[in-house]
Length: 379
Image (cartoon, rainbow, N blue to C red; front, side, top):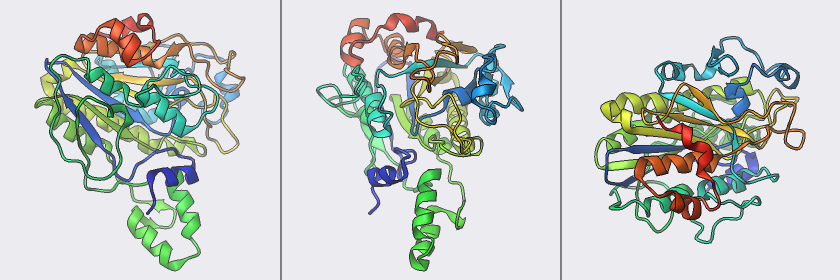
């Protein structure tokens, strides 16, 4: 059987698209709601929320820095056209971003370690997890008075470290198998190309109409629809992941599907939650950013500083938060320099929505974080 780890170790996509994508919930008191979306594979922050006002961008990205179809955000940043589905939310004040952020994890740029560090919430630069090896969202739930588990059914073996730990939570997974990530499909296509039996089986199982041409299987909308169903009921916290962000080659094309899935997930949440959207925060995070320079394959490689996507009526929209470091000040002369701790922005959101004390967030949920830098994120 092809496991999640063996697929990703071979294809270097690092859990970009699990075979079965879980949605995990926790029921809590109160009316505020939180949705955390893990963007697996390392979303390119520079290519998504484009700093077109930085004069060095065309030099570093001669083919990827195009402004054709890009929506201006604030005179310095623009939204990549593949995220056009989110533009109405920016205009209505329900969408924002946090730029030049990262977890404390540095230098190794491993998807596996980076995602573990992201979901565990560790403050260690080497990615070493906290003693409980649990998830930061689970630790947060344990500190919300009256929190209880939401009973659900889990299908498949994939789980979110983000929600693992001592606090009880429920889970659900769709019965439909979704498509592999672009690099996973390419690897297996090459592996099976010369074997008629395996090739035929792969084409049928992976959603290929012919070798190398994928029939898309979207999951962003489906996952969000189920989240809506539960969040309009007793659940107050939901988490799921969207893959496909590992864009080493042909990034302009490769990013289309994951960008569309993210946009569909967020707009589906807004449409389905109705009045509850005004009390909802959506936080989309990724394990690290990508290189400031495009590579020889018109893609980008594993980097450091990246971007968060935030949405919902409970968050301050129509703003790109964070401190822009400039592209003339790269980390190790290759990556966007991080100027903020991703954990602070997620932590302040938890503090504001659910009343978890700042002390608990800074010591237990995200050890060593300083929430003060993120105060401007809430509406």
